[in-house]
Image (cartoon, rainbow, N blue to C red; front, side, top):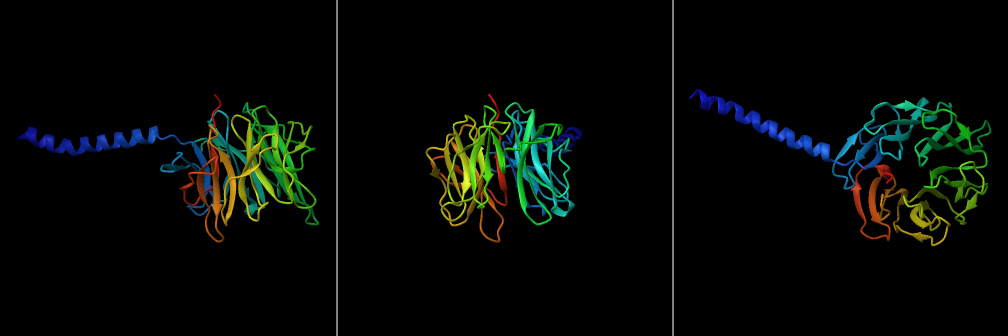
Length: 300
């Protein structure tokens, strides 16, 4: 009788352990390969999810927006920007992929530092800086620093933003023009040998180079509103990929270059994140209330 009672007590406990073990294994086996920002909790915070958008974790939790994420080449760290001074100052941060060991790298007051990108060897981070003078004239610069925040240096020949490294260490960016247009350009890491890749009376922004270095994806309003486009790294074979009546932003390549992520937003609504094949087929929404996706692309 005592034996039966003991079994009766143990069975629910054993059932709990089995359930806990299965859930824990599921959590451990989840591959978080997409980082993005979301205002799901009120402030803009950074989340990680799998490529189907089915499982997610939040890795930041502080007042002020965090976003515009970039993975380090080894997949162990994330760079992002964060708001300070009520949003008047934006600064670049790094953190472990689980959000621990957060470090603020830039501290320029009343400057907007954003769009961090890691060099192929992970030793440097380039970023964009925007600010206005007393007359309200805006300046756009591209800076580079060691990944620990030391040796911050402006790449003076480059005027613009949205930098992204190519696998061979050059920088693709959107250049700023006096006519308020933006063009996608490519240059050496020291700012020399600038080559303009697009030529339109439009804003063309946020270039990202595929992992094999052969193609660039970007956003442009050349056809009326912001859509996603791709081209070869030399500027040839430009093709429009999305066809929406709302703005599409911030494209990011999959590791194998077969798919893209981007965020899309209707007026007065939160943005959502979509996945599309690079030939503009198989469109599907994977994240509700998310923007600025970044797909992890580990070096082989």
